[in-house]
Image (tube, rainbow, N blue to C red; front, side, top):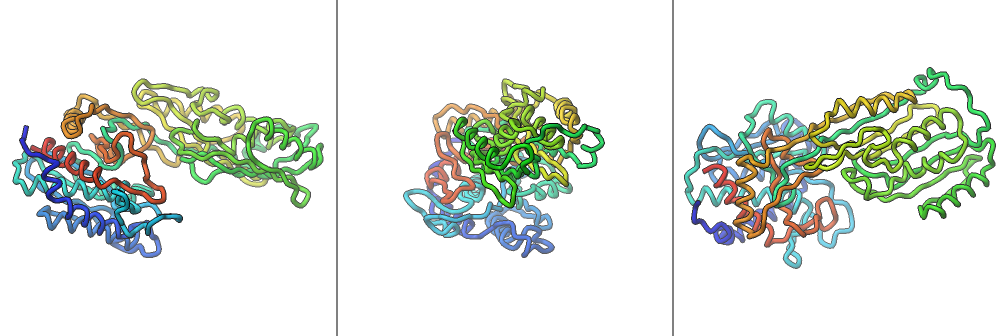
Length: 478
């Protein structure tokens, strides 16, 4: 065990660390297809941020490589094994309503405020300065250390996918882009579409519905599969019931359930609006799905045959079915938690395809092939077919692996707090490594300001994280 006082060494470089981080944050590195070119596939701002990070590393004495602008790396040390530190230089759009300019990187009440302060430019620079400390102290290493900088983590991960087509996979490593103490396991992530073509429904040969009260003309809810929809709109053509009766029934439903919405007549049609509560799709039970709630009301009406099949399947299998119980795919895991189902997008048009777009997250102890086959079978009743838009398999590092135990020990020694390990339903860059975990920078009890207006990191937390990363790099590579 080295006797280096890592926090003291970090504080010696505090002013330089803060100033360099501010310069990094002042670069607007948002995806910009209009300025994309060869060598800058995601736009000039992201290219500039990648160059800045590589430049800081090169100035510190690391060897650098640019992988066609999709990613870059910086390396130091010697040895066969490779320790990877994977972070990203792109940020989400800034949005409105900031108290300070989002790229000014001002310090307000001890907080460094900027888009990317916590996700992920602040911790990226903390890790770089941590490596600088190790290098400047001349500590002996038996392994190489490589920073890998991605450029579109906030969109499609083309960066790391392209990078690892040609570059070496680290022996082990971490991403400074999540929570302390340590995230060792991440659920499988799937974006799925259940599609019913009009001709496929017609091939079922379902007889015309009798005593129809209304025809479902259209329904739309949600924009993204990984978010609970907070708005939904359905258009009905009155048949057995007049517009006033449908509107009155809907208002009674809203009163009885405490939900918010409205009903209005437009050109002889009834338009129903439903409001929900949007949350991240990793835990849909915390939100209110406007789409399935609206469908739950529609189930009380006698609809046309296609509308009735669409609404019936959705109400039975998706309304408040956060864990897939009714479908028959519920599965709970002691480590990773339960399989979750989020109905993120619903689209229905009487003359077009009908769609449910689902975001399903599942633990490592149940196979994708098993539950997806059950899901496909259930919805085949209504001539829906399953399409896989994206599938990331579960990621888990053995809790006894030296990567995990070393980082736990470092965290405890630096903070004096027990370093528990965490399993999550989200996705971090840790899963891009064969053996990778997420390690900070958000300390327990701190609110997460990532992707929000006035995003920030406490300056003290930035310093503390740098000290932790410095010891971690040394301990892993010594």
